[in-house]
Image (cartoon, rainbow, N blue to C red; front, side, top):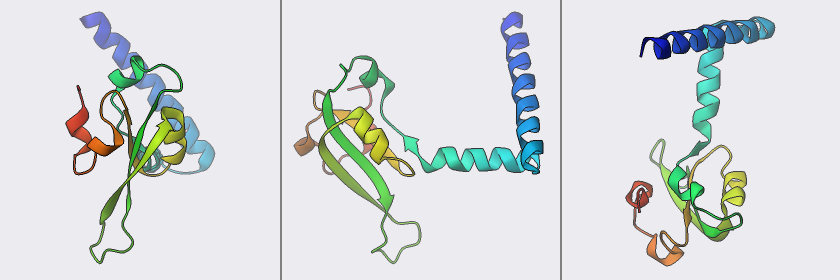
Length: 125
Protein backbone atom coordinates (compact mmCIF):
# COMPACT_ATOMS: atom_id res chain seq x y z
CA UNK A 1 0.00 0.00 0.00
CA UNK A 2 2.82 2.42 0.84
CA UNK A 3 4.42 1.67 -2.54
CA UNK A 4 1.18 2.71 -4.26
CA UNK A 5 1.08 5.97 -2.25
CA UNK A 6 4.67 6.76 -3.20
CA UNK A 7 3.90 6.06 -6.86
CA UNK A 8 0.83 8.33 -6.75
CA UNK A 9 2.85 11.11 -5.11
CA UNK A 10 5.46 10.70 -7.84
CA UNK A 11 2.81 10.90 -10.55
CA UNK A 12 1.25 13.98 -8.95
CA UNK A 13 4.66 15.67 -8.76
CA UNK A 14 5.37 14.96 -12.42
CA UNK A 15 1.90 16.19 -13.44
CA UNK A 16 2.26 19.39 -11.42
CA UNK A 17 5.70 19.99 -12.94
CA UNK A 18 4.26 19.53 -16.44
CA UNK A 19 1.33 21.82 -15.66
CA UNK A 20 3.75 24.46 -14.36
CA UNK A 21 5.81 24.19 -17.55
CA UNK A 22 2.75 24.46 -19.80
CA UNK A 23 1.35 27.41 -17.81
CA UNK A 24 4.72 29.20 -17.94
CA UNK A 25 4.94 28.69 -21.69
CA UNK A 26 1.46 30.22 -22.05
CA UNK A 27 2.30 33.01 -19.62
CA UNK A 28 -0.53 32.19 -17.18
CA UNK A 29 -0.80 30.92 -13.60
CA UNK A 30 -1.00 27.15 -13.02
CA UNK A 31 -4.35 27.34 -11.18
CA UNK A 32 -5.88 29.32 -14.07
CA UNK A 33 -4.44 26.81 -16.54
CA UNK A 34 -5.96 23.90 -14.57
CA UNK A 35 -9.29 25.75 -14.46
CA UNK A 36 -9.22 26.15 -18.25
CA UNK A 37 -8.40 22.45 -18.71
CA UNK A 38 -11.28 21.42 -16.45
CA UNK A 39 -13.70 23.76 -18.20
CA UNK A 40 -12.70 22.32 -21.56
CA UNK A 41 -13.08 18.77 -20.25
CA UNK A 42 -16.54 19.51 -18.87
CA UNK A 43 -17.74 21.03 -22.14
CA UNK A 44 -17.65 17.57 -23.70
CA UNK A 45 -18.85 14.99 -21.25
CA UNK A 46 -19.12 11.43 -22.50
CA UNK A 47 -21.51 9.59 -20.22
CA UNK A 48 -21.40 6.30 -22.11
CA UNK A 49 -21.08 3.27 -19.83
CA UNK A 50 -17.53 1.85 -20.34
CA UNK A 51 -18.93 -1.68 -19.91
CA UNK A 52 -21.00 -1.20 -23.07
CA UNK A 53 -17.89 -0.21 -25.01
CA UNK A 54 -15.86 -3.21 -23.81
CA UNK A 55 -18.51 -5.63 -25.06
CA UNK A 56 -19.38 -3.65 -28.20
CA UNK A 57 -18.19 -4.90 -31.60
CA UNK A 58 -16.72 -2.21 -33.82
CA UNK A 59 -19.42 -0.51 -35.88
CA UNK A 60 -22.29 -1.55 -33.59
CA UNK A 61 -25.28 0.73 -34.00
CA UNK A 62 -26.98 2.50 -31.16
CA UNK A 63 -28.68 5.76 -30.23
CA UNK A 64 -26.85 8.99 -29.47
CA UNK A 65 -28.43 10.89 -26.58
CA UNK A 66 -27.27 14.51 -26.54
CA UNK A 67 -27.93 17.17 -23.91
CA UNK A 68 -27.72 20.57 -25.58
CA UNK A 69 -28.56 24.13 -24.55
CA UNK A 70 -32.26 24.87 -25.04
CA UNK A 71 -32.11 28.28 -26.67
CA UNK A 72 -35.92 28.37 -26.98
CA UNK A 73 -36.40 28.30 -23.21
CA UNK A 74 -36.58 31.43 -21.08
CA UNK A 75 -34.89 29.56 -18.19
CA UNK A 76 -31.20 30.28 -17.74
CA UNK A 77 -29.14 27.13 -18.27
CA UNK A 78 -32.07 25.13 -19.70
CA UNK A 79 -31.06 21.99 -21.59
CA UNK A 80 -32.82 19.83 -24.18
CA UNK A 81 -32.35 16.09 -24.87
CA UNK A 82 -31.96 15.15 -28.53
CA UNK A 83 -31.78 11.51 -29.60
CA UNK A 84 -30.22 10.31 -32.85
CA UNK A 85 -30.93 6.65 -33.75
CA UNK A 86 -28.80 4.32 -35.86
CA UNK A 87 -25.32 5.74 -35.25
CA UNK A 88 -22.05 4.19 -34.12
CA UNK A 89 -20.21 5.12 -30.95
CA UNK A 90 -17.49 6.97 -32.91
CA UNK A 91 -20.10 8.98 -34.79
CA UNK A 92 -21.72 9.82 -31.45
CA UNK A 93 -18.38 11.06 -30.07
CA UNK A 94 -17.79 13.20 -33.17
CA UNK A 95 -21.26 14.75 -32.93
CA UNK A 96 -21.01 15.16 -29.16
CA UNK A 97 -18.09 17.56 -29.06
CA UNK A 98 -18.83 20.41 -26.62
CA UNK A 99 -22.03 18.85 -25.25
CA UNK A 100 -23.02 16.13 -22.79
CA UNK A 101 -23.77 12.86 -24.54
CA UNK A 102 -24.25 9.14 -24.12
CA UNK A 103 -24.30 6.33 -26.66
CA UNK A 104 -26.71 3.48 -25.90
CA UNK A 105 -26.21 0.24 -27.88
CA UNK A 106 -29.37 -1.18 -29.43
CA UNK A 107 -28.85 -4.37 -27.39
CA UNK A 108 -29.23 -2.26 -24.19
CA UNK A 109 -32.24 -0.20 -25.29
CA UNK A 110 -33.79 0.61 -28.65
CA UNK A 111 -34.46 4.14 -29.84
CA UNK A 112 -38.16 3.62 -29.15
CA UNK A 113 -37.46 2.56 -25.54
CA UNK A 114 -35.37 5.62 -24.69
CA UNK A 115 -37.76 8.62 -24.61
CA UNK A 116 -38.55 9.79 -21.10
CA UNK A 117 -35.72 7.84 -19.49
CA UNK A 118 -32.67 9.38 -17.86
CA UNK A 119 -29.20 8.53 -19.16
CA UNK A 120 -28.33 6.94 -15.81
CA UNK A 121 -31.29 4.51 -16.00
CA UNK A 122 -29.40 2.39 -18.54
CA UNK A 123 -26.13 1.99 -16.62
CA UNK A 124 -25.47 -1.57 -15.70
CA UNK A 125 -28.17 -2.83 -18.04
